[in-house]
Image (cartoon, rainbow, N blue to C red; front, side, top):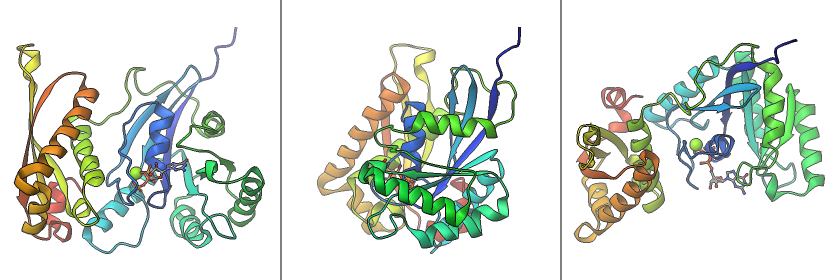
Length: 305
Ligand SMILES: Nc1nc2c(ncn2[C@@H]2O[C@H](COP(=O)(O)OP(=O)(O)OP(=O)(O)O)[C@@H](O)[C@H]2O)c(=O)[nH]1
Ligand SMILES: [Mg+2]
Protein backbone atom coordinates (compact mmCIF):
# COMPACT_ATOMS: atom_id res chain seq x y z
CA UNK A 1 0.00 0.00 0.00
CA UNK A 2 1.24 3.49 -0.80
CA UNK A 3 1.74 5.80 2.16
CA UNK A 4 -0.30 8.99 1.75
CA UNK A 5 1.87 11.94 0.71
CA UNK A 6 2.74 14.61 3.24
CA UNK A 7 3.94 18.15 2.53
CA UNK A 8 5.68 20.59 4.79
CA UNK A 9 7.06 24.04 4.11
CA UNK A 10 6.96 27.78 4.60
CA UNK A 11 4.31 30.23 3.37
CA UNK A 12 5.19 33.89 3.85
CA UNK A 13 2.33 36.39 4.05
CA UNK A 14 3.19 39.85 2.70
CA UNK A 15 1.22 42.94 1.78
CA UNK A 16 0.37 46.51 2.67
CA UNK A 17 -0.25 47.57 6.27
CA UNK A 18 -3.84 46.74 7.23
CA UNK A 19 -4.26 44.19 4.42
CA UNK A 20 -5.33 41.63 7.04
CA UNK A 21 -2.14 39.52 7.20
CA UNK A 22 -2.29 38.93 10.94
CA UNK A 23 -6.04 38.30 10.86
CA UNK A 24 -5.41 35.66 8.18
CA UNK A 25 -2.68 33.93 10.19
CA UNK A 26 -4.92 33.80 13.26
CA UNK A 27 -7.91 32.47 11.36
CA UNK A 28 -5.86 29.76 9.65
CA UNK A 29 -4.51 28.63 13.01
CA UNK A 30 -7.80 29.13 14.88
CA UNK A 31 -5.78 30.87 17.55
CA UNK A 32 -4.92 34.46 18.20
CA UNK A 33 -1.16 34.45 17.76
CA UNK A 34 -0.60 37.68 15.91
CA UNK A 35 -1.98 40.95 17.18
CA UNK A 36 -4.64 42.74 15.13
CA UNK A 37 -5.80 46.35 15.34
CA UNK A 38 -7.54 48.77 12.96
CA UNK A 39 -4.35 50.85 12.89
CA UNK A 40 -1.73 50.27 10.16
CA UNK A 41 1.78 49.07 11.02
CA UNK A 42 0.66 46.98 13.95
CA UNK A 43 2.99 44.04 13.27
CA UNK A 44 6.66 44.90 13.67
CA UNK A 45 8.38 41.52 13.67
CA UNK A 46 8.08 38.12 12.01
CA UNK A 47 5.32 36.02 13.56
CA UNK A 48 5.47 32.26 13.10
CA UNK A 49 2.29 30.18 13.16
CA UNK A 50 2.26 26.46 12.42
CA UNK A 51 -0.75 24.91 10.70
CA UNK A 52 -1.22 21.14 10.97
CA UNK A 53 -3.53 18.63 9.38
CA UNK A 54 -3.23 15.03 8.24
CA UNK A 55 -1.82 15.94 4.81
CA UNK A 56 0.43 18.89 5.49
CA UNK A 57 2.21 21.19 7.88
CA UNK A 58 2.39 24.81 6.77
CA UNK A 59 4.62 27.21 8.65
CA UNK A 60 2.96 30.57 8.06
CA UNK A 61 5.12 33.62 8.53
CA UNK A 62 3.31 36.92 9.12
CA UNK A 63 5.37 40.02 8.33
CA UNK A 64 5.35 43.78 8.91
CA UNK A 65 3.36 45.60 6.21
CA UNK A 66 5.26 47.12 3.31
CA UNK A 67 5.28 50.94 3.35
CA UNK A 68 7.48 53.92 2.60
CA UNK A 69 10.01 54.03 5.46
CA UNK A 70 10.01 57.32 7.30
CA UNK A 71 12.41 56.39 10.11
CA UNK A 72 14.94 53.79 11.16
CA UNK A 73 12.33 51.61 12.87
CA UNK A 74 10.47 51.32 9.54
CA UNK A 75 13.68 50.35 7.78
CA UNK A 76 14.24 47.61 10.34
CA UNK A 77 10.66 46.38 9.90
CA UNK A 78 11.07 46.25 6.12
CA UNK A 79 14.37 44.41 6.51
CA UNK A 80 12.47 41.79 8.55
CA UNK A 81 9.91 41.41 5.74
CA UNK A 82 12.66 41.15 3.14
CA UNK A 83 14.59 38.51 5.13
CA UNK A 84 11.44 36.53 5.83
CA UNK A 85 10.67 36.34 2.10
CA UNK A 86 13.91 34.41 1.66
CA UNK A 87 12.49 31.62 3.84
CA UNK A 88 9.44 31.10 1.62
CA UNK A 89 8.55 28.01 -0.35
CA UNK A 90 5.55 30.01 -1.48
CA UNK A 91 4.55 33.64 -1.01
CA UNK A 92 1.02 34.80 -0.23
CA UNK A 93 0.63 38.31 -1.63
CA UNK A 94 -2.32 39.57 0.38
CA UNK A 95 -4.21 42.33 -1.44
CA UNK A 96 -7.33 43.78 0.15
CA UNK A 97 -10.35 44.73 -1.92
CA UNK A 98 -10.85 48.46 -1.89
CA UNK A 99 -13.59 50.77 -3.04
CA UNK A 100 -12.87 52.51 -6.33
CA UNK A 101 -12.90 51.63 -10.00
CA UNK A 102 -10.18 48.95 -10.06
CA UNK A 103 -11.30 47.22 -6.86
CA UNK A 104 -7.79 47.07 -5.42
CA UNK A 105 -4.76 49.31 -4.99
CA UNK A 106 -3.19 48.86 -8.42
CA UNK A 107 -0.21 51.11 -7.79
CA UNK A 108 0.81 49.44 -4.55
CA UNK A 109 0.28 46.00 -6.06
CA UNK A 110 2.58 46.81 -8.95
CA UNK A 111 5.22 47.92 -6.48
CA UNK A 112 4.69 44.73 -4.46
CA UNK A 113 5.07 42.42 -7.45
CA UNK A 114 7.82 44.35 -9.28
CA UNK A 115 10.08 45.59 -6.50
CA UNK A 116 9.47 43.04 -3.78
CA UNK A 117 8.42 39.72 -5.27
CA UNK A 118 10.11 39.57 -8.66
CA UNK A 119 13.66 39.74 -7.23
CA UNK A 120 12.82 36.98 -4.74
CA UNK A 121 11.84 34.51 -7.50
CA UNK A 122 9.47 32.38 -5.45
CA UNK A 123 6.04 31.16 -6.49
CA UNK A 124 3.42 33.74 -5.56
CA UNK A 125 -0.27 33.19 -4.83
CA UNK A 126 -2.27 36.41 -5.01
CA UNK A 127 -4.88 36.30 -2.26
CA UNK A 128 -7.54 38.98 -2.42
CA UNK A 129 -8.73 39.67 1.11
CA UNK A 130 -11.90 41.23 2.54
CA UNK A 131 -14.13 39.55 -0.02
CA UNK A 132 -16.97 40.20 2.40
CA UNK A 133 -16.88 43.81 1.19
CA UNK A 134 -17.53 43.11 -2.51
CA UNK A 135 -20.03 41.33 -4.77
CA UNK A 136 -19.25 38.03 -6.56
CA UNK A 137 -19.11 39.94 -9.88
CA UNK A 138 -16.53 42.40 -8.55
CA UNK A 139 -14.56 39.48 -7.18
CA UNK A 140 -14.39 37.75 -10.52
CA UNK A 141 -13.43 40.92 -12.33
CA UNK A 142 -10.64 41.81 -9.87
CA UNK A 143 -9.24 38.27 -9.81
CA UNK A 144 -9.05 38.38 -13.62
CA UNK A 145 -7.38 41.77 -13.53
CA UNK A 146 -4.73 40.59 -11.04
CA UNK A 147 -4.01 37.50 -13.12
CA UNK A 148 -3.68 39.57 -16.29
CA UNK A 149 -1.39 42.18 -14.78
CA UNK A 150 0.90 40.14 -12.55
CA UNK A 151 0.58 36.49 -13.68
CA UNK A 152 0.82 34.93 -10.21
CA UNK A 153 0.89 31.14 -9.83
CA UNK A 154 -2.64 31.34 -8.45
CA UNK A 155 -5.31 33.84 -7.52
CA UNK A 156 -8.21 33.48 -5.10
CA UNK A 157 -10.37 35.49 -2.73
CA UNK A 158 -10.84 35.10 1.00
CA UNK A 159 -12.26 36.87 3.98
CA UNK A 160 -9.72 36.52 6.75
CA UNK A 161 -12.26 38.07 9.08
CA UNK A 162 -15.09 35.62 8.33
CA UNK A 163 -12.89 32.66 7.46
CA UNK A 164 -14.26 32.13 3.95
CA UNK A 165 -11.97 30.73 1.24
CA UNK A 166 -9.37 29.46 3.69
CA UNK A 167 -9.75 25.79 2.91
CA UNK A 168 -9.18 26.56 -0.75
CA UNK A 169 -6.14 28.64 0.21
CA UNK A 170 -4.61 25.73 2.13
CA UNK A 171 -5.18 23.46 -0.87
CA UNK A 172 -3.71 26.01 -3.27
CA UNK A 173 -0.57 26.37 -1.15
CA UNK A 174 0.09 22.63 -0.76
CA UNK A 175 1.53 21.77 -4.23
CA UNK A 176 4.23 24.41 -3.68
CA UNK A 177 5.52 22.79 -0.49
CA UNK A 178 8.26 20.16 -0.45
CA UNK A 179 6.96 16.62 0.02
CA UNK A 180 8.63 15.93 3.28
CA UNK A 181 7.72 15.03 6.81
CA UNK A 182 6.63 17.50 9.49
CA UNK A 183 9.27 19.79 10.95
CA UNK A 184 7.40 20.40 14.19
CA UNK A 185 5.36 18.28 16.55
CA UNK A 186 1.60 18.58 16.29
CA UNK A 187 0.98 20.53 19.46
CA UNK A 188 3.40 23.29 18.46
CA UNK A 189 1.63 26.43 17.28
CA UNK A 190 4.64 28.71 17.12
CA UNK A 191 8.37 28.79 17.61
CA UNK A 192 8.36 32.08 19.52
CA UNK A 193 8.61 31.99 23.33
CA UNK A 194 5.68 32.89 25.60
CA UNK A 195 7.32 36.13 26.64
CA UNK A 196 7.25 37.40 23.06
CA UNK A 197 3.48 36.89 22.89
CA UNK A 198 3.09 38.58 26.25
CA UNK A 199 4.88 41.69 24.98
CA UNK A 200 2.76 41.64 21.83
CA UNK A 201 -0.47 41.52 23.84
CA UNK A 202 0.61 44.61 25.75
CA UNK A 203 1.47 46.36 22.48
CA UNK A 204 -1.93 45.45 21.08
CA UNK A 205 -3.73 46.95 24.05
CA UNK A 206 -1.69 50.14 23.68
CA UNK A 207 -2.71 50.31 19.99
CA UNK A 208 -6.34 49.79 20.94
CA UNK A 209 -6.55 52.06 24.00
CA UNK A 210 -4.53 55.11 22.96
CA UNK A 211 -4.92 57.61 20.14
CA UNK A 212 -2.87 58.22 17.09
CA UNK A 213 0.62 59.10 18.28
CA UNK A 214 1.41 57.06 21.40
CA UNK A 215 1.20 53.48 19.98
CA UNK A 216 3.74 54.22 17.28
CA UNK A 217 6.18 55.73 19.76
CA UNK A 218 5.89 52.72 22.08
CA UNK A 219 7.85 49.52 22.49
CA UNK A 220 7.35 46.83 25.13
CA UNK A 221 10.21 44.94 26.74
CA UNK A 222 9.80 42.05 29.16
CA UNK A 223 12.35 42.59 31.94
CA UNK A 224 11.46 39.60 34.06
CA UNK A 225 9.24 36.55 33.65
CA UNK A 226 9.37 34.61 36.88
CA UNK A 227 7.53 31.33 36.51
CA UNK A 228 6.81 30.79 40.18
CA UNK A 229 3.87 28.44 39.68
CA UNK A 230 6.21 25.61 38.72
CA UNK A 231 7.91 25.50 42.11
CA UNK A 232 4.93 26.68 44.12
CA UNK A 233 1.49 26.31 42.48
CA UNK A 234 -0.07 28.71 45.00
CA UNK A 235 2.10 31.53 43.64
CA UNK A 236 1.25 33.54 40.56
CA UNK A 237 3.86 34.10 37.86
CA UNK A 238 5.44 37.53 37.95
CA UNK A 239 5.83 39.48 34.73
CA UNK A 240 7.63 42.81 34.84
CA UNK A 241 7.77 44.88 31.71
CA UNK A 242 9.00 48.21 30.55
CA UNK A 243 6.92 50.31 28.22
CA UNK A 244 9.31 52.48 26.28
CA UNK A 245 8.18 55.86 24.93
CA UNK A 246 10.01 58.72 23.27
CA UNK A 247 8.88 61.70 25.30
CA UNK A 248 7.67 62.66 28.74
CA UNK A 249 4.35 63.87 27.32
CA UNK A 250 3.73 60.37 25.97
CA UNK A 251 4.52 58.93 29.38
CA UNK A 252 1.88 61.23 30.90
CA UNK A 253 -0.68 60.12 28.33
CA UNK A 254 0.06 56.47 29.04
CA UNK A 255 -0.38 57.01 32.76
CA UNK A 256 -3.48 59.18 32.43
CA UNK A 257 -5.31 61.05 35.14
CA UNK A 258 -4.11 59.62 38.48
CA UNK A 259 -2.93 56.49 36.73
CA UNK A 260 -6.37 55.63 35.38
CA UNK A 261 -5.24 54.93 31.80
CA UNK A 262 -2.34 52.74 32.87
CA UNK A 263 -4.63 50.81 35.17
CA UNK A 264 -7.01 50.14 32.31
CA UNK A 265 -4.11 49.03 30.12
CA UNK A 266 -2.81 46.69 32.79
CA UNK A 267 -6.23 45.10 33.32
CA UNK A 268 -6.88 44.58 29.61
CA UNK A 269 -3.42 43.13 29.01
CA UNK A 270 -3.47 40.88 32.08
CA UNK A 271 -6.78 39.36 31.13
CA UNK A 272 -5.49 38.35 27.68
CA UNK A 273 -2.13 37.18 29.04
CA UNK A 274 -3.89 34.94 31.55
CA UNK A 275 -6.02 33.51 28.76
CA UNK A 276 -2.92 32.83 26.66
CA UNK A 277 -0.95 31.21 29.48
CA UNK A 278 -3.92 29.53 31.12
CA UNK A 279 -2.87 30.68 34.58
CA UNK A 280 -3.07 33.82 36.72
CA UNK A 281 -0.21 36.33 36.65
CA UNK A 282 1.00 39.48 38.35
CA UNK A 283 1.71 42.08 35.72
CA UNK A 284 3.89 45.05 36.56
CA UNK A 285 4.27 47.85 34.05
CA UNK A 286 6.97 50.51 34.19
CA UNK A 287 7.17 53.39 31.76
CA UNK A 288 10.55 54.59 30.57
CA UNK A 289 11.42 57.51 28.34
CA UNK A 290 14.08 56.82 25.73
CA UNK A 291 14.27 59.90 23.51
CA UNK A 292 14.01 59.10 19.79
CA UNK A 293 14.45 55.35 20.28
CA UNK A 294 12.87 54.75 16.86
CA UNK A 295 15.71 56.60 15.20
CA UNK A 296 18.60 55.09 17.14
CA UNK A 297 20.29 51.93 15.97
CA UNK A 298 21.50 50.99 19.45
CA UNK A 299 17.99 51.06 20.96
CA UNK A 300 16.46 49.31 17.96
CA UNK A 301 19.03 46.57 18.24
CA UNK A 302 18.43 46.05 21.93
CA UNK A 303 14.67 45.79 21.26
CA UNK A 304 15.28 43.05 18.70
CA UNK A 305 15.04 45.00 15.42
N1 LIG B 1 -13.99 43.52 6.43
C1 LIG B 1 -12.87 42.85 6.65
N2 LIG B 1 -11.93 43.37 7.48
C2 LIG B 1 -10.80 42.66 7.68
C3 LIG B 1 -10.57 41.41 7.05
N3 LIG B 1 -9.35 40.97 7.43
C4 LIG B 1 -8.84 41.89 8.27
N4 LIG B 1 -9.70 42.91 8.43
C5 LIG B 1 -9.53 44.11 9.29
O1 LIG B 1 -8.44 44.87 8.81
C6 LIG B 1 -7.75 45.51 9.89
C7 LIG B 1 -6.26 45.20 9.83
O2 LIG B 1 -6.07 43.82 10.10
P1 LIG B 1 -4.63 43.23 10.46
O3 LIG B 1 -4.77 41.75 10.43
O4 LIG B 1 -4.09 43.86 11.69
O5 LIG B 1 -3.79 43.73 9.21
P2 LIG B 1 -2.23 43.52 8.92
O6 LIG B 1 -2.08 43.31 7.45
O7 LIG B 1 -1.67 42.47 9.81
O8 LIG B 1 -1.65 44.96 9.30
P3 LIG B 1 -0.15 45.37 9.78
O9 LIG B 1 0.26 44.47 10.89
O10 LIG B 1 -0.33 46.77 10.23
O11 LIG B 1 0.73 45.27 8.57
C8 LIG B 1 -8.41 45.01 11.18
O12 LIG B 1 -9.32 45.98 11.61
C9 LIG B 1 -9.12 43.74 10.72
O13 LIG B 1 -10.25 43.43 11.49
C10 LIG B 1 -11.60 40.89 6.18
O14 LIG B 1 -11.52 39.80 5.60
N5 LIG B 1 -12.72 41.66 6.02
MG1 LIG C 1 -0.21 42.54 11.22
